[in-house]
Image (cartoon, rainbow, N blue to C red; front, side):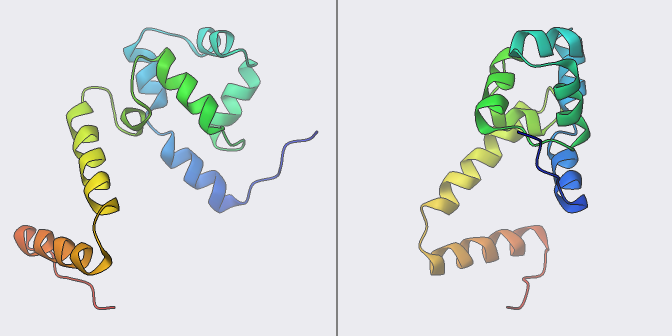
Length: 121
């Protein structure tokens, strides 16, 4: 089955999401060829993932994270910024468990603390 053609927006979103993967490869001293082999995909497939022209499944992204000895969320940031990734996970968990009104208040407090002006809805 041929690959689904992605829109320019989808390609850019994929590229942005995977922006730090090459840095992770260097950090773990792995070549793209080694990574492709260990994931059981071709070098061309890995290249398409990195270029954003082919979407990676959640399972593939999780397998890549395991290979790079990282949590999937850590791959969204450069290596060494794992503390920030953990903080993002904490924030996400908090937001997911708040009622809509409490969520809006919590975000408002955060914006007030940082000097960010609340957006008018």
